[in-house]
Image 1 (tube, each protein chain N blue to C red):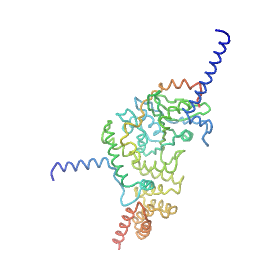
Image 2: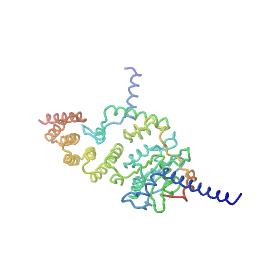
Image 3: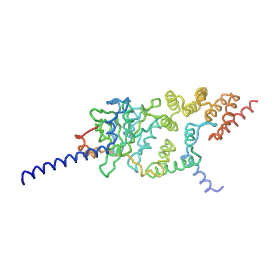
Image 4: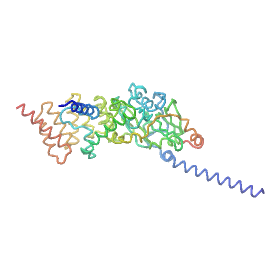
Length: 117
Length: 327
């Protein structure tokens, strides 16, 4: 086997290890998430799409300044549905950051003495 | 200018003023529909005044209201964190802020369950009245500008018309219901709580809260999930998903007898549930009761069109293999 091919295989496994969620636990215990997924008739297709959006979200996080480890740790804590919402939308969804309450002062004064509830 | 024209002028000004006031009021009503709704109906079983003064406060640094708001609720839930530690979980340098989904995902790393509230004042007030601090996403920008900001609602006083927030650099920001709704509305009334396992949110719905526990399970401690599922089953005893979750956590911790007990209880409520039968068969087989296991897995195999047929087949093969070895 040539070295380039070996490298490719290694890279594939490295990426797979980081991005694909792995199943722990032995044998064939069916999990709560699977029961819930079956209830909404999720098929293998959505599962595969889930994997894709996970790796996509990891790389989008990296593009926004996270390192690979941080990015995959964050994505690991998200549900498939959450990752699905985020993938490809990461620059469109709100990002809460600033806290300059002074900006709402104008509105505040219009209403403060008018009515408060 | 004669006297008549002066009177006419005064009258016109009065009419214009009254019209403007009406326009203003009706405009306000559509700007803050839920605040208007509260005037008509206050949510049942919620006090008109409540405040949890014990909730800690972390003043935010530049652009970092997300970590500050999250630390406020997590410390209140018993997880010893600081905003600086949370930076690596909820701050995105490229966006100079924190995303809502990350705010929901981060508490799970500390075995704390995050739960997104219904988009309503009722749910918010219900949680705050129960003593649960609520993280909200506000747009505090003016006019066409957007300026997203996370704050934590810790109390309210309806007769005084105020809500109390841990916000930015202010420990106790008092803000009128109207202004608060105006800023909160633009995030489609986004709000969440983060509570320790065993403490069910006051406004929790059965299916949504089960999903919240299941989401925590993926990165949280198994013992925390056991606690959460047990509390869930006290409230909703017939829920098959929670029974399976509880049994699986016991199983992962090696407590096979506890796993069996949880599944037997589930089987009483749902005697034909394929996942329950399959998992119970697996547990019994692990204990060495392969004969009982085989009977259960055969029953599971008879259910037609089950999405779990593959898993059932595997369990059946395993049980048969073990029986063969023991013969």
